[in-house]
Length: 425
Image 1 (tube, rainbow, N blue to C red):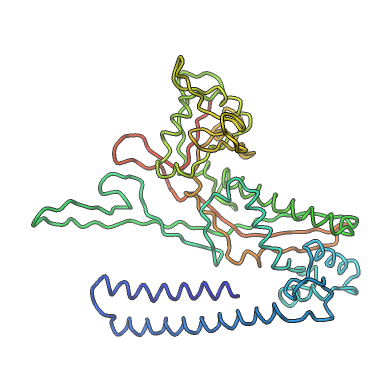
Image 2: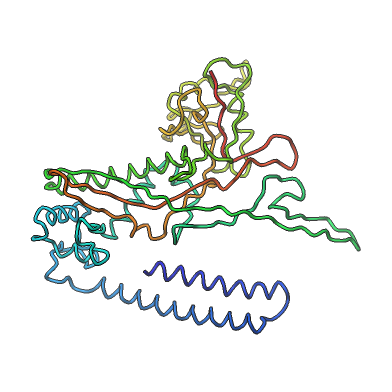
């Protein structure tokens, strides 16, 4: 609730600011209609500020309130954190199911959403809000790709992002058609107008399903270790795989299937599924220069042994292009090439196939998550032959910010933030 109010306040204030900025650009005062609209926004802002202050005060009261005796909580836990762990909550849900509601921990009803959420067949019990954000935090910590993307919050299931429609850097095409001139005395300005396009992001549902036996549920410590580790890892795997290979249908659009991908032809002198120094030079050459600062190499592990022998120069001036972990001052967990990490990932294609080695800048990839992700990430249970089924649900979408490679101002080779090497055989 508090997040939504703060977002509404920011949106309303932006609308008021836009009216002022328009009048300033046109060097005039607000019109009567604009002033009325501005006053309405101002009144709404004041109302939202009052609601936010009330919600914050309520949270403070709840935080410092004594624990009700009817709720069995740990001695050191505040009222808004009645569960020692997510596993403890799942154990209580299991007890509710097997006793058919005769032995139900009252903390479950406090966490339920909606009139029927305390009935497991009609929705189940919401995971406590202090645990849901932790799932995402640990998933991002385990991620190789999602943690590098441009994080775009969503407040609804559909988000339109206005992007500059730019596919060329020649004069008259930059920034979607904005032009600048060196103007001499008494010169005449030539009008220009920027073009924009809309990127549509629609939240896709990602479900993680797991089962636990009665024996596992009886051991809260072991179950907590399992849930805390496995669930975030599975979220991280599926999201990263979609960022790399996603089709865009019912899942995010991966850069390998997007128009933003630039595929570099293999070195004509090579035979077989090999990677040569010329291949990686060409990939680096086609990476858009501003994106190089956060670019990373992604490889299938079968590619790694091909990188060790890549060199440039000849005779006594030979220099290795790839530095492996623990080699020549590289103390990181990954190899390095052109000063950028070389990260083995499971999502990369097999050797010789496009996608076995890529160079990618994920600041140019929008990964959108519902801002109310905590509420959408819920656990529902169902009694299944001495097992409990656990389901976590999240809503995300993603796609590259570019629709196609870019034509530079000078030169004939297009550039892009996502580069792959063509097939070799």
